[in-house]
Amino acid sequence: MPVIDKRIGFLGSGQMAEALARGLMKRGLVTAERIACNDPNPARKELFKGFGATPYESNIDVARNADVLFVAVKPQHVAQVLSEVRPVLTESHTIVSIAAGITVDKLVEAAGPDAHVVRVMPNTPCLVGETAAAMCLGGKANSDDEALVRSIFEAVGKIYTVDEKLLAAVTGLSGSGPAYVFMMIEALADGGVRAGLPRDISQALAAQTVLGSAKMVLETGTHPGALKDMVTSPAGTTIAGVHELEKAGVRAAFMSAVVAATERANQLSKM
Image (cartoon, rainbow, N blue to C red; front, side, top):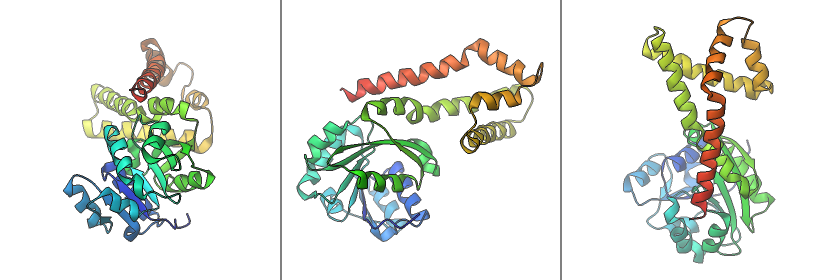
């Protein structure tokens, strides 16, 4: 990946901000000296300072020393933080919000009508460089801002551009999805223990199975149903297990979980 010739600032220096900063540095896209941050928790600023970033005492100082400004605070603080830095924002700033439920209209209202705003919905696997994220543009954001944000998030996974009306569905699927997958891994591991495997081996096998299966979907481009059929031989062990999953309504439960989380995300965005 080419080096990003931009200074990166984080308003809020929590785990997601740290994952992004470390991912950018690991890929060689940005050096630590070009990363600025602020956070109400001194320990988080010290952590960033520990890997070479520059912590500041005010959000305005971060904005003055950044070209890409990540809004990585809790949703209830987004408007306050953006209103605080608004006097020093210029058209050269790209504002990237990773705060859940805060719409583009709310971001533009706080940052100003000329702001280049990009709203992103990442997920927690960002912490291990495997995020599944989506973004939408707002305000004066253009294709250059889109390409810039894409290059940043591709340092820690995958990102797709969608209409804002679909970000709630992204939240329900990939935003909340890690919790569903963790539950599935836990249940598979419990099943292994019930069948006689030691806990540590059972959990490792379950997690590796999910990882390998996901890679097969992504790398082969084959439909998941076809991949499932490759494993299920007539009257074999796998189809017996699949039958139990179908009787329990597992497929419908996953679909319902995504829809329920989507509906809740829509509710929260209107509050």
